[in-house]
Image (tube, rainbow, N blue to C red; front, side, top):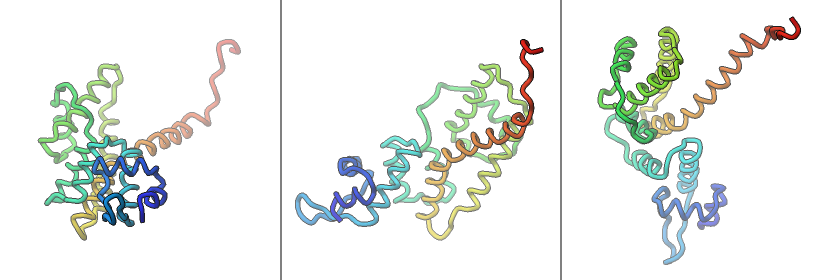
Length: 212
């Protein structure tokens, strides 16, 4: 198919397709003349993937390019796949934070994590520091509950990683990590609405001072 057909098939403007080609987010087509190229279904699928990563995935062009490189060239170890996904999701570096509270929690939960992943540990430390600064106290049992829930989610995800090939594994882990995070956030908010309804909606509204 020609570039105009490719754009129509993927439901993106031709200018966007050309931009992705320039940014190396989309592989080149087969040249049929100095100014014409033919594209196939692999280009359609890659376009849809790029749109998902840049849109719901919230990745930058640079992060998307790097992520696609790892999908096309999987790392040798399955355990390294998570590092690839987490690296894609990293935000700008934060100021140095005290990781001691995080290490205490990880030891309490008996979690085996990558000691070199200071970015993710730093993100948790910064979140905990932000809660303390705001005077928002999260009880230890509530924090432990969050940890149990996240561990259950993680075990479900890792148990579903395909093992038939490195390429399918890296696609599942990387895309599952990047694109599932918005899903988890949306589910949490909807679950909060449901829990709030169950706890509060059936209760009568307390009378105001004016009617007492």
